[in-house]
Every structure is written in structure tokens, then in C-alpha cells.
Picture 1 (spheres, rainbow, N blue to C red):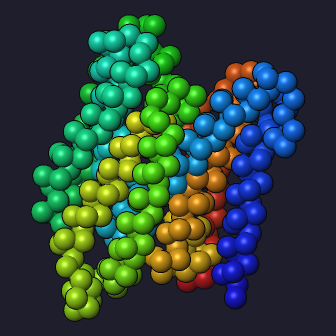
Picture 2 (tube, helix red, strand yellow; picture 1 turned 135 degrees about the horizontal axis):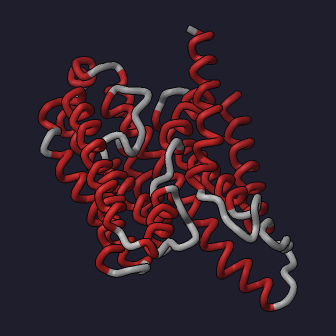
Length: 315
């Protein structure tokens, strides 16, 4: 019975955040009665697509975080743990060196870099979860070193754009909103399809195999799914941390560990967190904007520390 109240609260909160994201900005606009043509343009051609982008990207990052935590058997795992964000950043900054100040080129470079990182990590998948996690940490350090070198060589006019993208930015996304929303829906459907196998994997690989789960195939599918949605999210919005780390923990606390219930809540909760963060980021110092990744960290760190204390107290 308690879960129904949580679902109702989640839906109501999502509607409230959606209306706030539409109305709040440098200028308040009533979403139910927009006035002149300028206000309608701001509302439906600027704020509405950005709100949907934030919702889809946040949901994708949260789903990827939930999958990585099961895949690696590590509750601290998150979408960037295998170095995908680092390789995407290298791709984006490399494109700036070739095509200066081109957001389209940055998006294409980030997507190519993310998939390069994925293919490199896949070479270590046969080493098992611990080997793959260690390889991801080392690769993340390698990509960070390459990125530092590229930033040192990058012309000064491209530095601001590079740093803005690296800290998370939804204002210049060139990924179509429809593609992001369809990817969000397909990722959630894939998660629900794999929900029973994920529940079994939580018991351990041996228990999962005794229950008829092909653990090797499941891990390959999880790695590809989680990496692919991370690559798309990073391409659309840059590197945004803590969404994939915090949201799955909160939803497990509220809805339990069964993935058929937890994953839909995670997809909604991740979208809501990024919508909230982006709304605050573009209004708190308006007309300027804060990087949305800064806001997710400021929200995510205290929540995650509270979760650690809460779980320790329960234990």
C-alpha cells in the first residue's frame, strides 16, 4: 500500500516540476495562459524542448546507473565509472580543435568518443566485473590525461565552450528531443524486460545461473545498454554527475529492490532531478546560467551522504 502513495507523490511532483520548469525563468510566464507571441515562442520553442531534453537525459543517466550497479556488483557505480565520460570529453574537445565553436561538431565528436571508450572497455569485459571496473578506473585516468593535453593545446576562444560542455550544459544540445524521448522509452522497456534476470543477479552469479539466467549474456547486454544510453546522454548534455549514482539508491529505498518497480521509478526520478537542477541553474543567476552539472553535484552529494548514514543506521 505504501508504494502506491509513493507513486502518487512521484507523479504529482513530476507535474509540479514540469509546470515550474515551463513557467520559471528570467521572466515568469503562466503556462496555462501565455500572452503574446513572444511569450508563446519562449514557452513552447525554448523552454518546452529543453525541459523534455533534461527529463530524458536525467532518466537515461539514472537507468544507466542502476544497470551499472547491478553489473559491477558495486553500489557506488555510476554511468561514468568505466571512463565513457572521459572518452566523450576527449572527442568533443578534439572536434573543437578542428571545427572551432561548432556545437554540432562537439556533439558528433562526443558521440564518437563515447563509443570509442565503450569499445575499449568491451575488450576487458572477459576479465569479469572486478577486472572491468579496474580497467575503467585506469582508462578514466588515461582519458583525463589526454583531455588535459588537448585543453592545453586548444585555442583560447574554444576553452569556455569546452569547459561549459564538460560541466554539463543543456542550452546547446543538438540531439533531437524526439530521439532522446524514444531512447528513454526503449531503455525503460529493455530494463523491464530484463527485470527478472536483474533480480536474480542481485543474489549472486551462482544463484542466478541456478535459476536459469545466462549470466555472461546478461552482463554483455547490460554493458551495451548502459554504455549506449550513457553515450547518448553525454552527447546531448555533456558530463552530468551524481544523477546515476543517487537516484537508483533513493528509488530502492522507496520502492524496494525489485527492478520491475524500481526501474520505472528510477527513470522518472532521474528526469525529475535533472529538470529541477536545470530550472535552478538557468534562473538563480539569470540572465546568466550555471552549469547544470554543478547543481546536480550540490544536490546529489548531501543526498548520497544522507543515504549512507541512513543505511548504516538501519544495518
